[in-house]
Length: 97
Image (cartoon, rainbow, N blue to C red; front, side, top):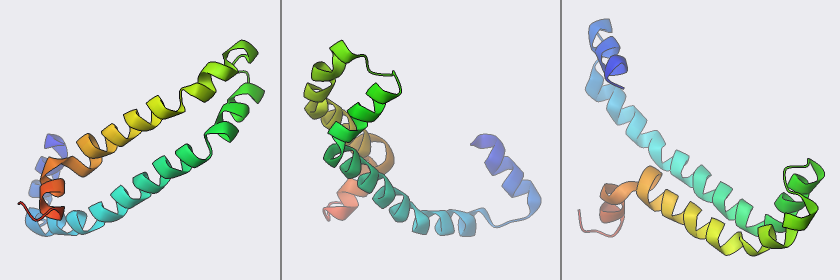
């Protein structure tokens, strides 16, 4: 990151304009990630079966993998809240920031 900012600054680009443009695209990136997480949750059985066909999930592991859905979704939702969305954006969305 630091090297990228240094390269931008030395190239003569206005860093603040670049940051503003990237900030506008951030919401779309978050929305894509939310859709991917939702798709994983809705298609969990198909995902486990796909893993089984590719020998990533062994036959004796299928039932445990199917039962793991709620834990996987909790982890992915936690990831969304903590990493891509972040507390600052959550506070802004809730009108607290």
